[in-house]
Image 1 (cartoon, rainbow, N blue to C red):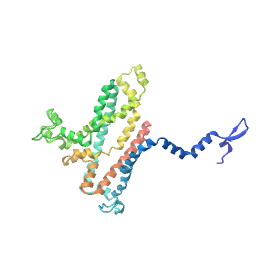
Image 2 (cartoon, rainbow, N blue to C red):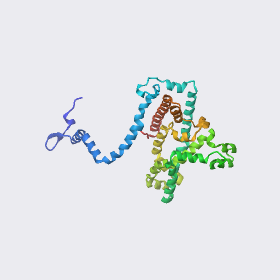
Image 3 (spheres, helix red, strand yellow):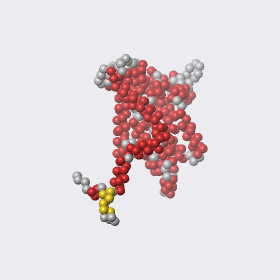
Length: 350
């Protein structure tokens, strides 16, 4: 395709001559001095870029560099040799986990099922709670009362996992000669919801109660803190939207349904996609502190399975393969959830 002078020049009616197009001059100048402008921008906001350095280092050392160890999923485990010098083992670890005839395959599928169920229950019961809390906070007119309620719901998030699990253990602990049952165990036994024998043995020692305890403690710990995002989206709604709804005769519940929820729908969709992406990534610290061999059948997850075989059983290849499978499935869940959200609501992460 041939270029013409008119593509780069414009005719001046006054001087009856051609001159360079001003828009093209600006584009050429921007392209010519692109990197200089980038450098000037960095120098202008150098404080902000310095603040980014710690986060960049965190991602490098705790997110990208550890990817090198994923080679251990395909190499023969050797404590002496580094991963790069170990012999290639192919997909033997994955085959052993998926279709192996030994007990390890059974334990892995049990851990995978428990991981999915714990995350799915958390998505069903834990995901709506921050939204409900944010809606309630928005209806509190007194700034003092609202701030107090918000601080009280945020506090559990700032407790360490050890402290939180210790509190949970004390609330549902088994009875002993020195001290009685936990408060929650006593209350459930008094109401007849559980038998005295089960309560006295400790609810955390019963596989049937582990998932309920895990989910309730998770909601108590994180619902208030997670509501910050939704509350920030709610307070950004224009007051004119509420006024228009009131003129149309909408009450509080109707305003929530037709004004608030549609306004924060994009935020909800983005948070849902990220939540689905971490559906199989359960932090093993909490499970590790709450479970015991009696509750492996409902409490053992992929992370604790990998921890048990990788550190205690010295089978690092098996542990690495289990975690890698878990993360790959999580990646496909993010892609799938993002695709569905983009087609259904035109809102997506990318």
